[in-house]
Length: 352
Ligand code: SF4
Image 1: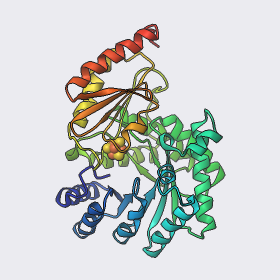
Image 2: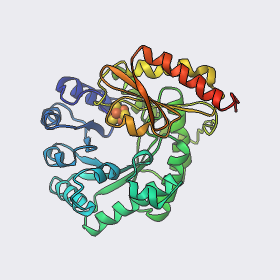
Image 3: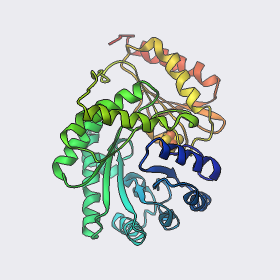
Image 4: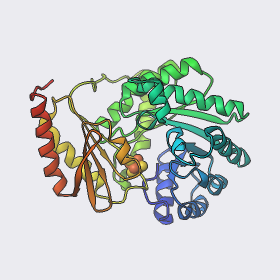
């Protein structure tokens, strides 16, 4: 996935090429505005990479984007919140129509952290059930519309949820192609290990058709995601399985892979500083989430014990869903330490 601002044609074309040269069969670009869509037309000319665009917040841009890409991804959870006056069926029909006119595939990209509220209500306490049900419903919508060129992804930052969600979905619709990934897997080496855990438990069972490795890396190292993805596939193909660490307990730091929506490049450094600062609490059963932007940051940090999401000049700190305040990039670490100590003390300081 390109993490450069899409409107920066030079940088995004270069990154798409670097990913392609590293072995990426498909490169994802984010498009959030008409300006990004215009830049995409030029990027298309400058790279030989097959391109996919994520229509997260602006599904109506599909018309401007589709002529230049091979695939469009939509998130049903985000689609729910836009054009509320239209039925979901109509919105999906629009996307299928645009994709069909330009011979684009569609990816129904469901994330555990952003499932539409109706599914959360129908599956209280079962976020995996909500995610799978949502994906199945959208497959049915596309089936009913006669659109066949689609695939599904079911992602979460917890590899166990990725495994469970994809297994459940595959048992219901084994013929639908699946794109696998652990979202916000975070920094190396944990990010690679979490991804391995998920892939090792799915791919040997015939589940998964394409993969994505999602790591928090600076732009100049972004192509390492591709190298690591190939290495994991190679190891699985040759039966080389690694020991599986238990991510169900102890300190868990999740951080997004960054993308063009990052507005302050200090994000990656911040994620590393958070990991270093929190290392004293490695035995605590806690999750800290570090997200790169204000688009997904507020929602994707809700499930963490402590969450940080980055704005252009400040970092927002949360405890669960409660916002604690905004702090400068240097000051936020001190505040995080205060909140971490408080949380551990409230829990009796018991290390798992
Ligand atoms: S949280 Fe924001 S910056 Fe990070 S990958 Fe998601 S959209 Fe991009």
